[in-house]
Length: 296
Length: 296
Image (cartoon, rainbow over all chains, first blue to last red; front, side):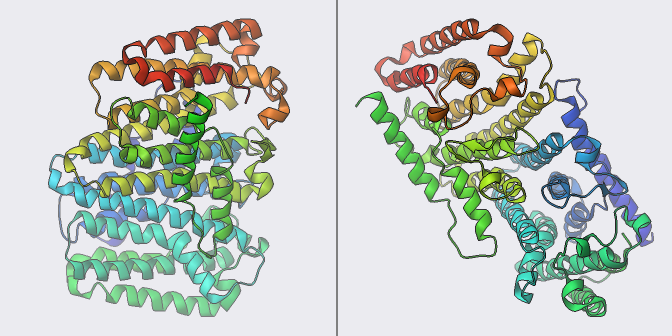
């Protein structure tokens, strides 16, 4: 199977799983549920849940165990997109080629839909904890729960720094710190959750964390490049917004060529961490290359 | 000790406990942490954490075990206040006699501070789960975690209905549903968490849930009355906003006299549930009367 097909297969698994959590009842808060569904099923890349599952599969085959965590992290990702797009933060009108949540519904609904998705991630985790039959697994799952909540905290802090430092010239160390939090924390968490749940060795855990941190940083560098020179039609959102908002990005700080060099280097280093796993890690290698070469 | 003194003693316990979770590091997201602290320490009544602790004390003395859950629910309450006050929802300028979070900081910070407090509640719960030495307690705590996440979900739904039905004449059953969710869910959860953690009998659990549901509804009726005829200076926020926003409240639907009758009846019924506990429940009885008689 080639990479594109395999990616699509993963996306289908995740979309099918997410669909189980979409609420269809005819209740007074029906439209709130629809707004959560609108964003959750808007057709993102599903990179985070794919990282959970693909990392888990390096060590174990039956992915059932890690699916709730794949779902939970995708809920968190979508909560963060809804809130980032709000008029009070980035004020974006389009996402994935569709109106943003507050444009499609309204601002109050978008704020509450974001809150709802953030909270729903924890509903999913709490149910998985309670449903754990093999009690010897509880220590690992509680550790995952704790790391999950800390990573979300870091993501929120990163987003804050992003808005706070708009229009300011930021020191290199702050740019790194912001991105390690804003984008890095959830991508790192995705890989580490897969690794935790598959109960890998300490040495594997270190290598995979390195892989995740490099890919996470590379993802942000690529995002900054796309925001400067991507194709609006393919991206599904306007290009040049970072510049307009005077965001501090890798491109604004180092220029586009330097940003591209950094991207290449990060992905090369990330892939090197996977050498010991040989053929088994083929998909994770190609996923890193996809992060580098994607045009949306 | 009279009720006022006892209430103050509880508030001090909670404020001291909350203070432990305030982050003081000098980091790039320092102001975000300050905005969370600003709302969390703004001097609310602490009704929810007090209900957790006082219910727990009906059965057990050492309250240490229930403190993390008292903290977590107060974080949730404050997240909901910050988001409700936002320009996109209620657009309120004052809370507890001080500028609302987005007025004191800015809108982006307030959105993210709300997100941060919501998420922090789960950090607190995850740490408590991991730190549980007596593993036989884990089943109860995981059940509390699940009920916690469901109650927050209900609160968000209630808030959505509140904004959605503004200016519309709402059926009685919707008004009940909205309030059972918006205010009721967290107050009910507070009492039930105290009861769960103290491992009371099924029969106690039912009585205390009834008490909580009555007090929760009464709390909202009283809020509606205060919003109509309270004293702005004591309340710390403008009076008459419900009317201005054409909110559907007990007062707008039934008139002030009928609302007051309903309040009296609910508190009387709530107190009746506590009869079996005699002197031990004195504080919970007085707390119900306080909900009825408070002027802020």
